[in-house]
Length: 541
Image 1 (spheres, one colour):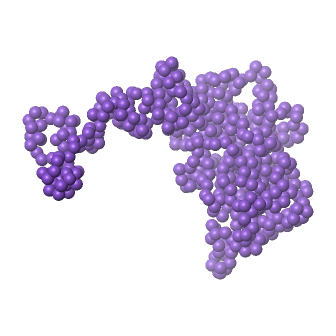
Image 2 (cartoon, one colour):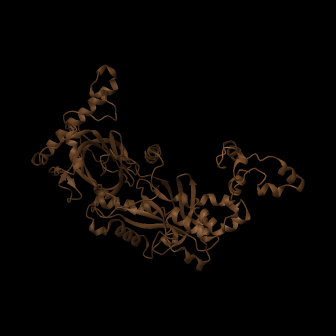
Image 3 (tube, one colour):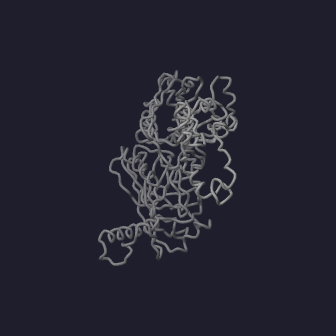
């Protein structure tokens, strides 16, 4: 009866059409003799609000007759229904035959496709194939809506970044790849792994796009919330006529932009061959887990997001920078056999800012090491004070984790050690007074140069920086054995670039922001983002 009240405009009263249709003649006559009990009409009678006179019902002209939704012209109903969410329309179709007939109007579903999924194609072209906009909405867009957004494939330690989007009348899964090493400022590369489209009225077609022989039969299964899997049903399409050797050389050109003969470092050749053997065995039969972009806050040092970073012989990898109160973290979205995807490669201690020496002194690696190690010792003492409790009085050991330290700048440094050819992760900074933080906001900077003996994959790094913080980097042996955090320096260059000096490895990583725009990638809450970070880290711990 509540549905009647909304749609007929009369409600549970003697004027309700549905109610009259179910009554016999005798019941209708009896009902007509009963007083009207509509609550809103009782309020009107009591106050005389709509009658224009203080005397109630008899003191003025009767209220105008109510207009039933059913009496509106079809073209107006089409406009009304087209403004409703598409998920509500099936329920509306069950109200009556008239509504059901109107909801077959393609104009309604064309608007829902455009407003909810951004389909900007001329959907009128569908008439040629006999597929309606309603079919596109129900059998393609709505059915596969749960796989839209950012995902991380389960490819062992290597991970990846998949972006599933609505592209015209297709849903396409694009694998995003870093630019070729060491060109960290170049744009991301991407290639399609699968697509879903509707060519017939029956159901959507899933096609695998892996390999070089065109689209072929595939399958998508939504495993559970925030997880789905893909399967190729024709893996022979992935094979090349020249066998594995041709497949490897083709993969190497796509992945690294070079041939094996161009890579003279033996260890690097081993890592590349290992990655090819490991990743090619999946044949695009993968499980994906949803990832979110980090939430931003006006007080963040820079805008969080995805960055490309240099990792020595492992090439370029994708890292997610996020802020968590007094610290910032870089989480690997793609990884390697030493530090797998999902692990925190660097952690920056925003409470301990480092004041770099002048350029000439900075060229001396020992001087930088001395500064960073002093900060590490200071951090250790403060942690010890916090563990000891209130007996330390109001020293800095008692400070709230989210309360920045104020006082003279204290430098210190630690060295990150690379085991088995890789190093990662850190925390950052030495304590600093409020004044030195101004360059980060004003765009001013100080001269910066790498110390002599520190290696860098990319010599084209910025020569000025805004500020530096103490940090730690995660390093481990092959197979993520004996992981440990070692000290380093986080260098903020500008809004889109930062670096990290791994002191123990005498190595420098440069990070550049991923400029691509991603839809359906916002976390529903900060708690959901934190939970996502824990989940992807636990998979490789």
